[in-house]
Structure formats: C-alpha cells, structure tokens
Amino acid sequence: MLMCLVYHGKEVGAVQAVILAAGLGSRMGLARTGYPKGLLRVAGRELLLRHLILLSHRGIREFVLVVNPRNRRLFEEFLSRHPDYRVVLVDNPHPERGNGYSLWCAREAVRGPFVLTMSDHLYEEDFVERALAGRGLIMDRQGRYIDPEEATKVRVAAGRVREIGKDLSDYHGFDTGFFVLDPEIFAVAGEVVRRNPGEVTLSEIVREAELTVTEVSGLFWTDVDTPEDLGRAGRALVRASVKGAGDGWISRLLNRRLSTAISPYLCERLSPNQATVLSFFLGLLAALLAWFNASLGAVLYQIHSVLDGVDGEIARAALKRSRFGGLLDSVLDRYVDFVFLSVLLLRLRPEGFELAVALLALLGTVMVSYVTERFKGAYGRDAYAVFPVLHYFPGKRDERIFLIFFFCVMGWTRELFPVLALLTQGKIAFTLAVFWHGRTGLEAENQGQPALKG
Image (cartoon, rainbow, N blue to C red; front, side):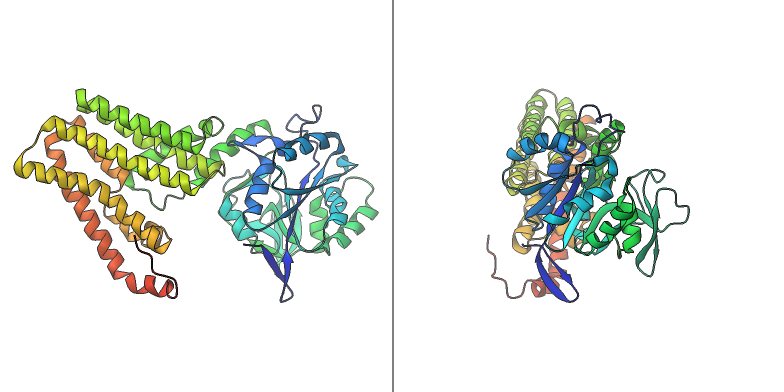
C-alpha cells in the first residue's frame, strides 16, 4: 500500500523520508574513527536499515539521507548492498553545526510532505505505524524504554509545542525523534540558521515552528548514544517485540522470561528459520531420549518449548518475519509433539480402552493448534487477539508441554494420557463454542469477501 498523507483536507501523494545521519558520534567514541552510528547493528540489523525496512513496508519509496562527507563512502558501500531502496545522499558540510543544520541541508531534495527521523533512533513496528498516522512532532508521555534524564522533553499548549529541551522540569512528554512534516518547516529552519552562525539544534526549529503534537505513548522507541545503549537497546527491543496475544500461561510466566534473555545474543548469529530448525531437532532429540528415560526426555522437551519462542523473537526484533517462517514453525512443532507423545505411547504399550484414550490425546494435541490455525486461514486474524477469553481455558502448546514434563518427571506417564485427552478435547470444544458465539460479528466483518474453504 502506497503511503499518503492528508494536508488541509486533500491527499498529497507519496511521502519521502528524511533521515539525519551526519552526527559525529562523540559519546559513542566514533568521532576519531569516522564510523557513523547509523551503521551500527542492533539485534542483527543496522540502525539505518531498520528505518529503510520499517518505512518502506509502509509505502515510503524515497529516502533522503543527510550524511557527514567524511563517512559518505561508508554509506555508499552500505547502500550498494541494498539496491532495492531509493536513497538520495545529501552532504552536511558542517556536521558540527548540529541536527537542525542537517535538516536545513535536506531542503533541496524534499518535494512535499515528509517523515523526519534520526539514524540513531530505534523504533518498533507498531510505533512507526501509529506515528505515520499523525502530524508534527510525535510525543510519548510514558517514556517506558528511555532514560528520562537524558531525553528531550516537550511542553504542549493547545496541541502545539510551546517549549522543548532536556532541562525542562515541567513537561507533558518526550520527543521521540520522529516527525511528520511539510516543506514549510524549511522556511523556519532557514530563519534559525541565518540568525545563528553556530550550532543549530532541531529543538530550536521545532520550538520556533510551534509544531503540532501527536501522542504515541507506551510503545518501544529509544536512541543509541553510548556503547552501553547498544546492548540495552537490543534486549529491550526483543522484550518489546513480544506481544504475547497467543501465549499460554506457561509462556507468560516462565518461557518468555527465559527466551527473551537468550534471543538478544542469538539475533546476530542465527536467522529465524535456523532457530526454528534447531528447536525442531532439539525436540526430536528429546523424543529419542524419552525412549530410554521419560523424565530426562521430558526435561529436554520443556527446554525445547522455551527455545521454541526464540525464532519468533528473532524474526520480530531483527525485522525478518516471513509467512514461510511462520508456516515452517507451525508444521515442525506438530511433528515434534506427535513424535514425543508417540514415543511415550510405545513405551506404555496400552491396549483396549486405554489405547483409545491415548489416541484421543494424541489427536487432540494436533487439533488444538489446527482449530486456531484454521480460524486464521478463514478470517485472516489471530483467534486469541479476536477472542481473549480463549486464554482462560488452558491447553495451548506451552501449557501442554509443561503438563507432559510435570507428569513424566513425577513418574505418572500412564496417567498423563487421560488428563491430556480431557484437556485437549475440552479446549477444542471451548474454542469452537467461542467461535460459534462470535460468528455473527465475524461474518459481518467479512461480508462481501469470497468464502474460504480448506
């Protein structure tokens, strides 16, 4: 979808993005090396590439990158490895004059409304989507992921900037470094540049222009000023990328706490699909071990359950999500569950009614996931996001694996299958009942769309 903005009641067409990347990086220790902050990596991606990916996915097709002439060659080399993005490089011949002067340097390359951001800032996808729907300065009232002492504060009156700066004691929120502007800002920037022969900050221009303020609060954003910020930003980004709409109780209370501690270290080393395959083989190894020792196999199976969340966390944090990756993860999970329970079943060698109950448990384990996946295929939405009440009945994969782990460690393998059969079949019945109850609203939302058949 092509990103458009509306100004004064009319659509103004495709939007450019201006990214300021001419900073000296003094606090990062880069001033002597000339290496730009925008090319530093966080969670497996360069900061600049994150901007290009996030904004291009929302329809922005042209970027204006303001750089220090000293490191222009590094940016050219980087962009040559990413030829899909249309980027115009603009030199700031006086980077010591600040980010306000960098904005002024971009005036010749901008043709209409544009997005402005800083190359050393980091945003999650939801933040960018909501910010693009706003105007002027994007402000966050909460500042959950930043150091308030270091952040630029904003005081607002009648929906516009009245004061901005790091030393404000009375303020309404924080400047996120993300702006949605029109070219009129350059007239204000020109006046500030002409009367100030020294450093020109973006805050001065924003204050002078009395920009409109749009609030986007509570979502992840931060800036990277010091080496310590790099590590913190990666860990915070992984945590923020976990929305948890489909997580069960065990994931929320245990698994995610462990996986989000691991994922930041794997973002630079593994792709999401590699993490999926690694978790798959760990699950098969757990099944093999369970043939010889059910307790030890179950322990490894629970570890597999923890690591099963890593691939999704890497995909979201590193902006490497793909439809195939989600499909692969879902298919391989079904194989692991089937193989592990089949091994336990073969060890027990049940007969008659006991065998029927065990097979019902095996079928239910597959069907719980199939029902919600089929809902997503039919309606294009996550069942747990549409119907949060589904969380109240346990039986999701993380909860089933923990149940299997607990029963095996306690030596109750034979008792596991009747409990698992009741749990899974109950979960399926409850889920279908919820879908049936909400079917009228769902069908109304999808009215006019062709019916989907599986």
